[in-house]
Figure 1 (cartoon, rainbow, N blue to C red):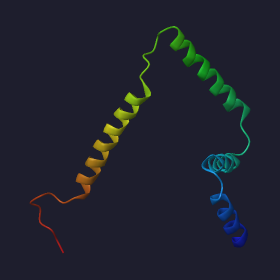
Figure 2: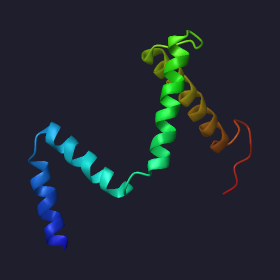
Figure 3: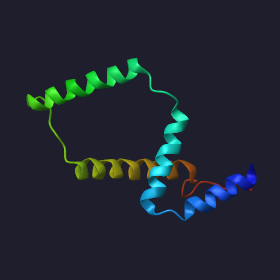
Figure 4: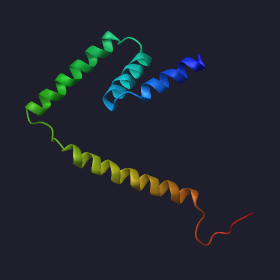
Length: 96
């Protein structure tokens, strides 16, 4: 099996970017198993509900680039807080 996997990886690396993306998607989808019809129906209904809200003007649409910018700022803030929690205070004693 290891030889087969190594050969598959080698051959996959020779594919175009588009073909590798298609292969990756296919492999990921194969891990999910069959779709649950009840879940699929629930998502269909949710999508219809959200589209109706948009059509009626009940929700504010935010451009994707603005959403991503907000998310980046939040992640940067979170990362900065996480780093501060791990670093010793400026004048705190350091034990070795």
